[in-house]
Amino acid sequence: MLVVELRKLVANPRSLAVAGAAVLAVGVLAFAAGASRSGAAASEPRIAGIGEARSGTLTVGVPGAVASRVYGGPNSAGRPIVVIDAGHGGRDPGATGVSGDLKEKELTLALARELKDVLVERGRVRVAMTREDDRYLTLEDRASVARGLGAGMFISLHTDSAPNPLARGATVYSLSDVASDAEAARFAAAENRGSNELGAGGGSVATILGDLAMRSEMGASADFASRLVKKSAGRFELRPDPHRFAAFHVLRRADTPAVLFEAGYISNVDDEALLRDPKHRSEIVLALAQAVEADVAARLRR
Image (cartoon, rainbow, N blue to C red):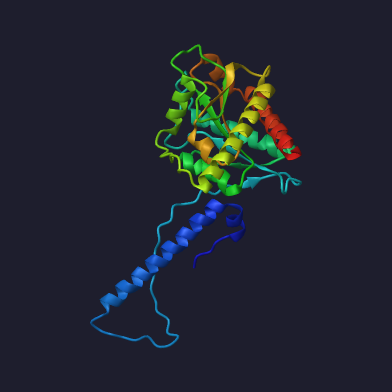
């Protein structure tokens, strides 16, 4: 039996298309299996009686779905969903701290959990996480959580690293087809490695409409990045020109306003020490939470 949650599929046309393709594939495989059984029994012809049931099994391999729990306060029903993506995880540790005993994946998960708790406590949005433990996820896995939930915002959390031990400060990236600078372009290329990002789809109506929607999301993402920079200023160190942009696959595929936030450089002694400190992380989390709430409120007023 194939069970499909129609309500979710209607809310997500892409999922509906995938489900349709799956149903078609199951039908084709079932037909082929039946034909194979008929061929095998050709030496002993047999006509099934009316209403006679035939036994048999059909196994179809389906990739495991990325499921996420949605968190919210007692009065949060119907509020926008913010997906928090703790970068790296599992076999992908990310950058290593200058001390040698701290991994990026550990810091991003700590920040994600703390941000989730603050947003839920404040009650203005609902929250989902791409991962809540130390597991590996592809970029597509991460983005699919936002698409599957019809999220109103996607925030990917990271920490930075550089050969220059003096480099420090937080950075926020939003999506753009053209990078703000060569460093942002290199960073996006490194993050996108192995993503198999799809190229342009031609000039069809669907592609044109999709491109228009993407342009709108790019603008909304840039607006959120600007709000985050303002909320962060004076609370913790920011890089010069802290809002940058490039073609990040995970941001493009989230299908919602999305940013990638680098909380600081774990290759810098001072930044690593601060990122280990829960009090410092609470300042970062509060700036993120306030920027999220201000951005959601501004879009709801339109």
